[in-house]
Image (cartoon, rainbow, N blue to C red):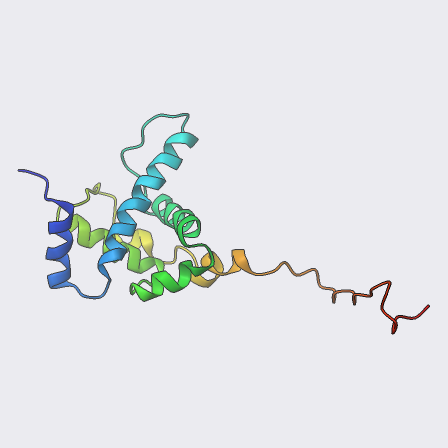
Length: 147
């Protein structure tokens, strides 16, 4: 049996499930490649063929932050992806269309409660809080500054 063309597979998915934008499927495929490369480097350059749900979620987070920076959360929400469980749904839509493979131990549950989206995609871009108010600025040439 021939592996389906990715575009054709995504088209079949979108005819049956309209919850997620087409770009979410392409992004997930790229995030999987990114995750496999990162995991391979961690494993002393041994090729990684399969990644766990948690590894994929970590890779998705890293890839989204690299690709979209502070807009990552907005982009994902625009695609209908609002929680880690949504990535699980996308993955298993792709599995059911033979665009991805799974092991016997892989399940949608692997993607539930992965991480909080706001903490994962917004917090890295918030200013650091020191617990102190900033010092007021004074200029040496300011006539209103005390001598």
